[in-house]
Amino acid sequence: MDIKTIHEGLVEIKTPEFHKISSKAPVFYNPAMELNRDLSILAIKTFEQELEQEISICDAFGGSGIRGVRYAREIDNVSNVVISDINPLAIQCAKENIEINNLDNVKVYREDANILLRKCRGKFDVVDIDPFGTPSPFIESAGISLKAGGMICATATDTSALCGTYKEPCIRKYSAKPLKTEYCHEIGIRILAGFIARTLSKYKKCIEMKFAHSSEHYMRIYATISKGAKITDESLKNIGYILHCDNCLNRAVVKGFAPLTPAKCPVCSKNFKIAGPLWCGNILDSTFIDGMIKNMETTKINQEKKACKLLKMTQIESKAPPTHYDLHEASKNLKISAPRLDDVLDSLEERGFFASRTHFKPTGIKTDAPVTVLKEIITALHIKD
Image (cartoon, rainbow, N blue to C red; front, side, top):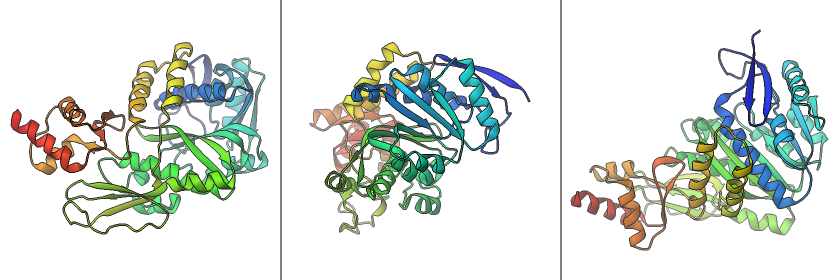
């Protein structure tokens, strides 16, 4: 078996080299997730600074150990890191990488993620769930293992389900109906956040979303956890549904577990499609993102340009309402060519509406303007050109 050496952040690791990255490989290094790990370092650093105390971290799907090793090496005030994996080759690899990086605050366990997390009730300040596929079977155990005030970090790579390409798996795994729209990746993140909120609520725990993004083949969420019946009840008011009209692209957000929703679109009278239940509240915290951006100044990350661009864009997005429009889709709906995106954004702001780009899509527009106003602007700019 060939062994390759990887340098990422401040660490060096060795890992077996497989020709294809898949769930069948016992342990592997995925270079496509480097941005994910870089952003995780920045997010947990920011969280630790807000907490102002030593933190304990669990990397429940250790693999080569690179994530847990980087946490121990690159984040200040980490008392201990627990790396877990069910595969013996992964355990061996993680132990070797801990030795290579001269770390004495990292422990490795060969254990099923759910069993380990349930054994460690209330032990961790940060739990990172980064499985191959859906994180849904592990969210409840992660919530049990977290201290009040802790942070859950969760990755989902089953984007075909969360984005509505395959509806039944999404309903089965997340108890929510997805919707294939131009903003399906945002819907997917909101479904994941809603699932986490509903799952933890049975333990009188609630989430406060800090940061979330959709990049390449995965979605990623960072949320802090608070405990208490009253604040959990209040937090659950952020659960609701998104109504979408395929005909005119109108959409509406309706909060509540079983709210009264209009069957027909008020703009064109066609039937609404419904996505949810999902998280209708904020998915981005501008103050937290400010902290992540500031931490970039003192953090060595290889994907600095990508991380900086993403963070600055999400910082602006944090002020936007749910959902977004795709300029090309809206222009296609009007049967005209698309004007310049910047011109549309400028026109929306001139009319007093919020308008920004979105990290979800290069041609996406975040705005609180009704679809009718957006279409008026696109039409006017088309005629002008």
